[in-house]
Image (cartoon, rainbow, N blue to C red; front, side, top):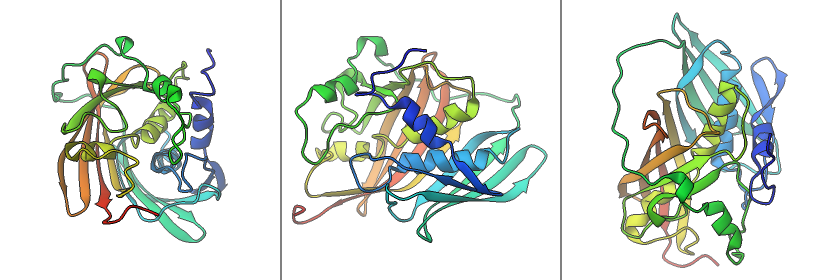
Length: 290
């Protein structure tokens, strides 16, 4: 197994982070890592909650999760995950997960799991896209840039390559969408839960930022207050995180200080493997932050 450059990628660190410690029946504990902010990264809580739910349904694979961010978490403190076994039916299982820190609920998620079965099949057509092997890595490009005082470079678990000279941090001004290829920089084990939880972690990278593009606002604008409010993923077809996935992102609406973003995720063969929906706070303050 090739070991990725630890100055660029922290793949194994994130994989270890997504595996939780069981402390009681249906109760798990996870740790956090620093992502440049005192708050816990939202994708981490999504991935850890999915892990907590999935280990109680080992014979079935997740097909949807619906979550809400309630309070920011502190990355210096552990997070406890309580799983409620809502229902186990003949084909589907439902779980509810509450993430708790210092006695406060910071995140809730409902997830549904299903036995693998065949059925009718159709999908949204994959968009035209550039070959990811011909696009410069955004991670390498970020590393080359002068350090930003409020947004230091942090290693990531996967490579990102924005299509058509776009930028995962902001995209092209005026566009309502962007395309980003992503792939883990090393071969991963054949464990579906590992790929699903890592996908949950990565799904929170850059999606909400798409809602800023039509307004010419970029991450780091001193007027901007931005935070995820809710996050939903539908898993359509099997995938691997160590193979290229295209995130075709768009923002169909922004209003009321909130932005709605969608991502259609395709494998390199053009199969739609997942759909993500996220709404978040994109509030502009009248005065820049002190």
